[in-house]
Structures are given as C-alpha cells and as structure tokens.
Amino acid sequence: MNDVRKKSVPEGAAGEGATVSDPAAGAILTIDLGAIRENYRRLKARLDGPRCAGVVKADGYGLGAGQVAAALAREGCDIFFVAFVSEGIVLRRVLGSVPAIHVLNGVAPGAEGEAEAARLTAVINSVEQLAAWRAAARRAGRKLPAAIQVDSGMARLGMAAVEVEAIAGDPQAFDGIDMTLVMSHLACADEPAHPANEQQRLEFERLRKKLPKAPASLANSSGIFLEPRFHYDLARPGAALYGINPTPAEPNPMLPVVRLQAKVIQTRMLEAGAGVGYGHSFHTPAPLAAATISFGYADGWHRRAASAAWFEGVRLPFLGRVSMDSIILDISALPPGRLKAGNLVELIGPSRTVDQAAGHAGTIGYEILTSLGHRFHRRYLNG
Ligand SMILES: *Cc1c(COP(=O)(O)O)cnc(C)c1O
Image (tube, rainbow, N blue to C red; front, side):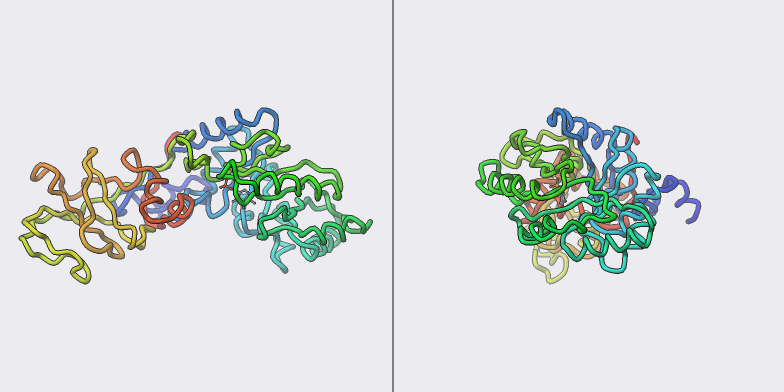
C-alpha cells in the first residue's frame, strides 16, 4: 500500500484521495491538467492587462489543490486563493515561498501565528480581523501582507461601509500591514444583465477610494465575462478553470477537465417483476439485463439525482435507488454480453458535462465537483 501511495502521489501534492491504485478503486477520476492550463490561458486572454489568480479552495474544487496549483504555476500564475489557513499551509508546501496565497475567509482568531509562519496573505473581512493581524505583525516583527475585502453588496464577507469609514479615519489602522489588494465579490456575475453587478461595482469604487491605494480585484470566473470595467487589476477565477461554464446562458467557452468512470462489478438477467434495489422502488416490467457498478452516494452522487451512465455512447439508465457504494443500471440497450465485469461506464465526461450532471441533480457544477468522493483512483493527465 505504501508503495502504491508513493507512486501515485507526486512529492508534495496536496490532493487527498490521490492514493488509491487503479485495480483497487471502484471508480476512476481523470483530471486533465492540460485543460486547466488552457482554461487559464483563455481567461487571461480575455483580461487584456489585469493579472489572473487561481482559486484553489476546497482542495481545488475537489480536483487536488496541489496538482492544480502546480499546473497553474507553470502557466505563470503566482497569486492563489484558498478559503482556510489549513488549506494555505498545505499549498505553501507545494508552491514554495514565492507565490502569494490569500485566505478568503480571513484568519480565524488564534490562527494568526500559523498563517504568518506559512507566509499567507490574510483577507481582512472585519475591523477585528485587521486588529488581530496588526497584533500578529507586532509579534512577528515584520509587516504582514493583507487584502482588504469590502462588502459591496453581497452581505457575506468583507467590511461594511461603516467599518471602512472607521478605519479610513484611523491613522494607526494599517500599522504593520502591507496592504497588497482591495477586493470584493460579485453576487450575480453569472447574470450579465443583473443590475446588482453595476451597483456593486459603484459601491466598490466608492469604498476603495476611502482606503489606502492598492491594486483592486472584483471579478470571479463569471466576472471575467462582464465588461472590462469589472476586471480591475486582478481577476480571481475558480470554476471556469475546472471547466464549469462561467456564462450559463451561452455555450461553455471553457474546455472540460474532468472524466469520471465507474467499474462494472457484475451483470445479471432479471426476470419480469423483479424488485430492484432498496425499497424495491422499481420493478422490472419485462425481462431486463442489468449491471451493478462500483459507485454510489458515498462517492458524491446524490441519491436524488437518479440518472444514467454511458458506455460507448449508449445511455444506461439507473434502476431503483442509488446505494452507498453501488448503482444498478439497465443495460438492455447494449448487445447481450457486450458489457462485462471490469468495464468502465461514464458518469461525467464527453457524454455528460459537469454542468449537465448538476442540472440533473438540481444543483450547480461547483457542488458536483466539491462533492466528489475520496476513494477514486485519480489520474492526472498532461501534468
Ligand atoms: C470562490 C471565490 C472566487 C472564485 O469564484 P468562481 O465563481 O469559482 O470563479 C472568487 N472570489 C471569492 C471571494 C470567492 O469566494
């Protein structure tokens, strides 16, 4: 087992679950790092001037933060965003000392020492976080980098206007702070015509003028597809790098990144009237060929998202309920004997995009990717 781990996880890679060998796994997750790099290039090409960061929170949207960040670094990306200090510490080990690693949720009280030691950039969301980071700078005996986040109208994270005004009038507010960025986040960027976009931009303008001068950042993936006035000095894409459509009303301008395939465990012929799966929620109306695959809700496929898998372009509907570790497929659309134990059927890939899988499950591609389980064999292409 240790040998397998050493072979399948490159030194320093942060991807959890990258440890299962192909024969031992029930399903194979293929991640095309070349496609992530191409997506990064496509986003950069839209920016024309502003820099482009990489958002790799939640283990790189479930795909392996270390692998993804290393691939982006090879494209010249040297600014990264994670959500938690814990994620930043892991990423620092992968990326070395140079790239900036921002902690979007801010540094939780008590974690300032760890964040400073890992040379992380705090995203400051409140006056309290600013005071704690100032104190950490005093203790460390050096200036500490910080991005000031203002709430321009999402009501989630960042300083409210009154807080911005309070620190704007306080000459000591930025003692020991190296303010590297002022940022905010758009609530409706994936709806280009939504009036909140321009309202947030104007509020961002108003608030950032009260703060010390620093490069500005507003756009996530979808924000990159808004007018250039939303781009500022730095864009912060996540989803689009991973192949999720940043322009849901239009065709996807990004390359697909993920392929998810599950192994067939066994096949069987069912007689008419057979009860299939838990609760016998389905009974065969006629004799039917079925296959059971090594993949279930514990792998991140919601039970309510009953759907289908594909084999060589042929759609194989799910039968009955999704189990924790297995799903039963109707394979009668295939020639008898065509599908065998050990064959791979596709759940995400050319036959069904991440966004389509999300549509079936009543959710968004972000949730599909970050729900993916930790017992797949992970195959990284074009690293
Ligand atoms: C997650 C996040 C991003 C990236 O958003 P995408 O929609 O995935 O591009 C950018 N900025 C902030 C503050 C975020 O929380």
